[in-house]
Image 1: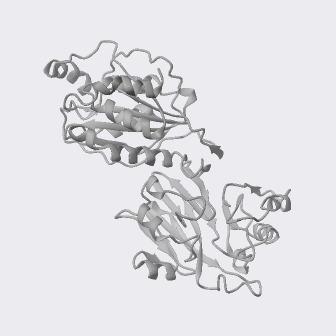
Image 2: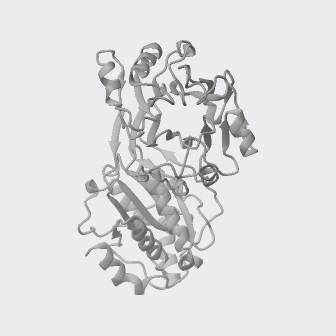
Image 3: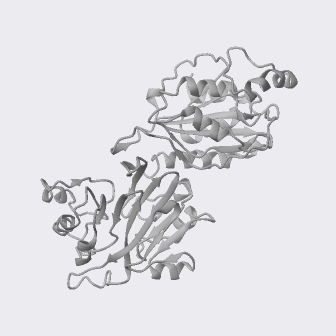
Length: 438
């Protein structure tokens, strides 16, 4: 049975009783958690394979699962207990309560047609039972722990007023190391049929987090000195996303510059960096879509003044941001006669991020300026490549020889024949990676 047939046949069962929720007031902070300890440095492209698996007793989790599957164009699978729970509420409580309090497994039936190897993104749905996962869900996750490695996994749950409680933490522990576990989401069972927009927004945010937004974004993974992962996602042109230890960092987010990007589908950012005020780097609407109360918006003084909020950094400034990430603002400007009006000296920023020992240089719009000689121990460099506004391939190659990064991403390249950079740096020992930064 395909997903659409499943949805059609099961609609009559959706939303029958209030979700089963007898639980304590234990809290859980819904942070993104990357538990992957096996991913290696490299690049990947999502293959657009997404699935939703769920267990439902009252019908509320079923409704949520069907809505998410429809929005995500995902295959839908149901977890069923080998011995079904009683349909009577009190009898179900008497039977399931001891299992939940003891975090015991519940034998489940095999799921016909489910091959986890086919999927990159896995949504898992559970009701909140006594503040934790329903036992059949826990059983399914533990049975498939090895198969979930390397995948993006996210929990959604329905509740009768208890909220998230310990479900997110218990889910992440059950999944274990080797998967990317995104922030879980709780939905009230009492209003689930009125929560379609929220369910669809959740589905979109998970797909964005998994790298399936903005045309199958290319993603590169690097390890810090302590073995944590830094994930760099190419959105377009000068726009990129950096993920580290549950943090979301967006650089020069711009919605309308082609291809259009729906930033409301991305998780809210912890840090937003803006290099300068040109339309292909600065977009108020994109910032608004990504911003939350605690977001640090850091920009050059001109952008900070235009926004009326955030932190202004000038060339030479340094500051510590979230989780001890060090940020240095460095010069970015034109030097070629007749081009200096595009990016005058002293106005715009490039940035160097030091993330647990990993040093990333995002140059902004610049040419191969003398100050690049002061940049030391750069692991990853982003250098712009489109004259007359930034650099020619020859200038990028010269700048790379000065900086000596381990990995170079030419970006902001428009119609420039950027493969020429790789040709010029052949044999240099610099790993030149061409990504979708046109």
